Image 1 (tube, one colour):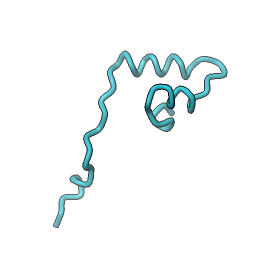
Image 2 (cartoon, one colour):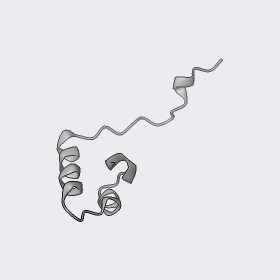
Image 3 (cartoon, rainbow, N blue to C red):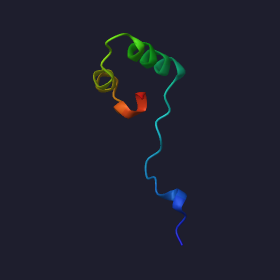
Image 4 (tube, rainbow, N blue to C red):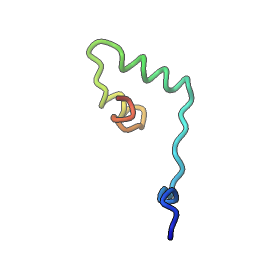
Amino acid sequence: MENPADWRTESRTVYSNDFKLRIVELASKPGANVAKIARENGVAHNLIF
């Protein structure tokens, strides 16, 4: 039987702490558009939430 943990074919992206902090700062501003921030930074919007 195939190992269920081997389903992932691509490795996960590891984001730097600086990148994460920048995204949080942008998303925390009043009136911030999370979807737009995600698109501009090349990440899925659900990663920001």
